[in-house]
Length: 137
Image (cartoon, rainbow, N blue to C red; front, side):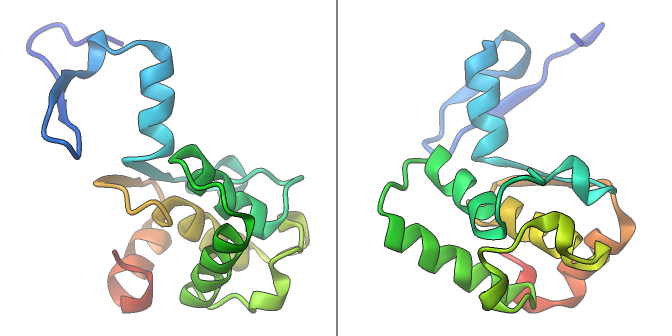
């Protein structure tokens, strides 16, 4: 949706300014997977339920260029610990997690790439990021 007046601009990590509404679809997808983060009220909207917990976190890392399997898995393990999910659940499927665990997994998935901007549609998720230092970036 284009604004009726004004512009929406985004400054990327390199300092270049882009008009959000002039960005192509591929550029917007890349932005959504890297420097912008979204935490949905319903964690099922922000997770791939048929992909393991580690895979959910690893996908965002791969979207920003990570390729070493061991490094991706180690980072996913560290983020599971940061959001207080037992690292032994790394190969577990999110549909087997409680709602709270799904929400924390979604937070880990979102924050693993250290987005410069994030949107939290869930009050509990937003307050978790403020009240738990281990979850903040």
